[in-house]
Amino acid sequence: MTWAGESIHNAILSTLASAPLGKKIAKLGFAYNADGTIATIKAYDTDGNPLFTLAFTWNADSTLKEVSRS
View: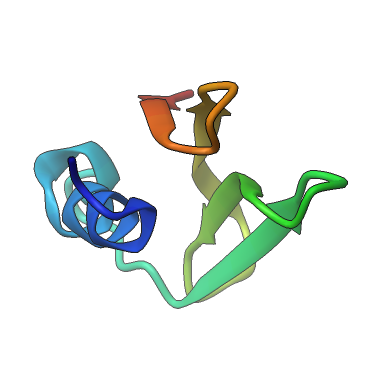
């Protein structure tokens, strides 16, 4: 079983969370669910423009189920 923080860390470091070609991530914004788990992480470029969003889905036992990018 992987600790949720480790899964989030791995997702952020993977290509799933890489900046688009020619862009640099300068800021991350976090949104949380009512239970304190991370709902989304939004990445922004140096001009404050949104680059992508990572959405986190959780299992009933509070383990991380899925991370998707949009």
